[in-house]
Image 1 (spheres, rainbow, N blue to C red):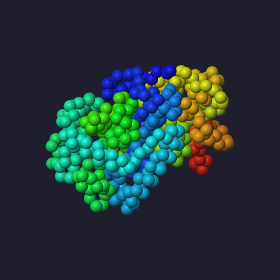
Image 2 (image 1 turned 120 degrees about the vertical axis):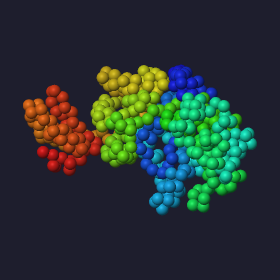
Image 3 (image 1 turned 45 degrees about the vertical axis):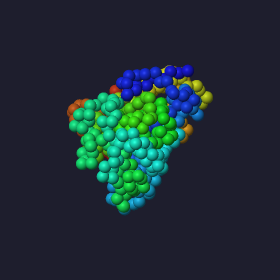
Image 4 (image 1 turned 135 degrees about the horizontal axis):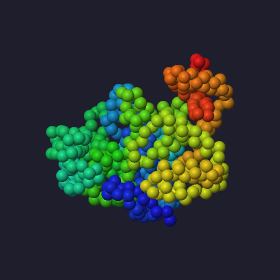
Length: 451
C-alpha cells in the first residue's frame, strides 16, 4: 500500500500518515461564511483538500473516507449583509451556498461526504457549551458564555504563539464581561432583529469557533484523522477549536494540515489595489475551471501562491495540448501517486504529466491527470479554439516589433500585445516568429479597433 506523508502543523514535522481506522478515514476542513461569492483565495483550500480527498480515496477506497466541510450560515457578516440589502438571512445564505457549490464544482472538485450548515447543529453546540460550563472551562457573563483560556494549559501550542503575542497582534476582543482578554465567546445574546435560539443562557446565537467543534464531534466522532484549512485560521479559530474540544473530553484531530495564502501578480489581493476577483469573475471572463485548478496545483500548498496572467496562459496552453494527446483506458502512473503521497507534492505530479506527454503516452497521461481532477469529461469543452484568421494581426505585430528593434521604442508593441490579450488572443513571441492563438474567451468584436 502507498505510504502517505503529511506535514503536521501540530508537530511541525512531516510525518507518516497512519489513520485511526483504515476503513473509516476522517477529515474535517473549515468551509466558508456564506454571505458573498468565493474569491480565488477561498478556492485554494478547496482544491488542496480535494486533492487530499482524492488521494485518500485512491489509497483506502472510495467508501472508506469521510470528508466534512461546513458552511457557516450564522455570523455577524451575514446579519450585516441582510441589513444592507433588505434581503432575508435565509435567502442570502441559501443563494450563497448554491453559488459556492456551483463555483467549486466548476474547478473540478468532488463534493465532500457531508456539507453541514451551522444552523442545523445549534442543539449540539448548546450541549457542548453546557459540558464546558459544567467542567469549569466556561462561564456566563452578561448574557454571554465565554471559554476560559487559562483553563487549558496547552493553549497556543498549534500556532506556536505566547499569550502575550496573541493579545498584541491578533483579533482579540477586549470586553468588560471577560475575565481575561484572551477568553473567547461560545454564546452571545441576540436582539430581535438577528437570528437567535433559546438556550440556558437566554435567546442567543453561537460564537464562530464552537460550531466546528460541535459538527466535527457529531459527524466524525471523539477523534478523527485530519483537520485542514488555510494557515490564517491557525489562530484564533483552530487554536480555540482545540482548546474547547479537548476540555469537553474530545481528543479531536490528530493531523493538522494548513495551506498558505494567495497573491495576485506579486501583491496581496485587495479591493483597494483593484486585484480582487472571485472565482465566478474568472469563469465569466472565459477562464476555464480546469485552467484555474492547474494554476493552483503548480505551487505546493505549503508555499505562498501567486496568481498571474502568465501562469493562466501557460496552463491553458498545456491543458489544450494534453487534451489533444489524451487516450482512454490508461492506468494511473505510480510516480504521480508517489508525488501526491509525499505531502501532496503537486508540482512533482505535474512534472510527471509533462514527462508522459513528452513520451506520447496519452493513455497514462489521461488516467493520471484525471486522478488530479484534470482532463475529465465534466471539465471539457473550453479548449475548442475558434476558427479565426489572425495572420493580419500577426503581421502587424511583427512589423511593429521590427521597427521597435531599430528605434528601441516598444510602446506600440506593448499596446498591440495588450489589446490582443484583452480580446482573448494568446500572444506567443519568440526569435523564430509570432504566433497568435484565439483562446476560449476570444471576443472578435475587440479586434475591430486594433491597428
